[in-house]
Image 1 (spheres, rainbow, N blue to C red):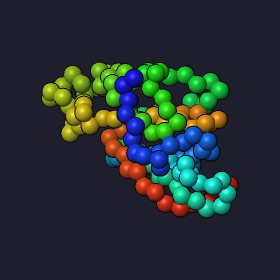
Image 2: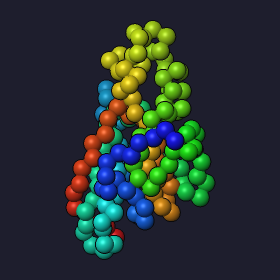
Image 3: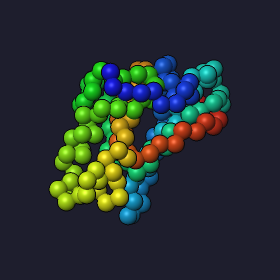
Image 4: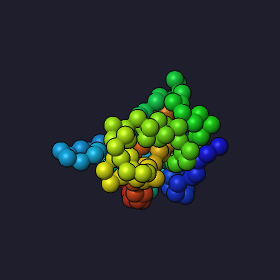
Length: 148
């Protein structure tokens, strides 16, 4: 397996309901994807501890429903938690096919973005599905939110 866990208990998702997803984009910048879900410590009723993942400068994201679950790449890399796929086949395909690749300086995928700056994250939710996000950065925050 070629992945690493990101975060601690706040990024575990076993028995967690489907997350709230928001995608925001502005002209001249890449989208930001925000995902919120109850922390594993949530009692199941009322307001509770919430994890907010903010994926910055997103190049690609996808959702695959649990009943038809499949993986485009790295099928052995999965957890009911946030992971980073370290030797990502998806990332390698993106890096090899980018329009800037043929004229980029060594180790640059596009202007100002080195190959090593690109990350492939995966997170699975019980009875919901999994998300794949390829982006330049992530922020993990804990807050409180109302969950039904």
